[in-house]
Image (tube, rainbow, N blue to C red):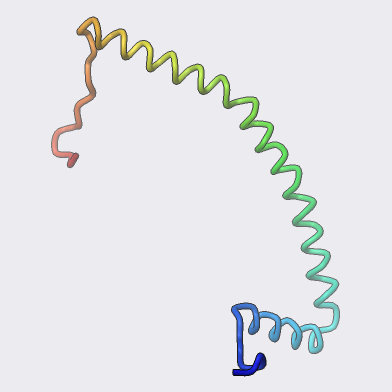
Length: 91
């Protein structure tokens, strides 16, 4: 088996883009500019998402621990009311 017979998943994409670059003037620069614009938009959004997770994670964890403690205390005192499924629902 020769290396020419091996086709990978990107073969058709690279072939189609290669032909497109030849047939459509300006396709390569247009795709490059679109990639740069997408990267410029994605990097700040990623930074905001990471900052939100770092800043919002600890308060959320503290809230969940408080709720867990309240439920454990209520269960120990025998006043825990469990949620029931609405009638007709499948559980």
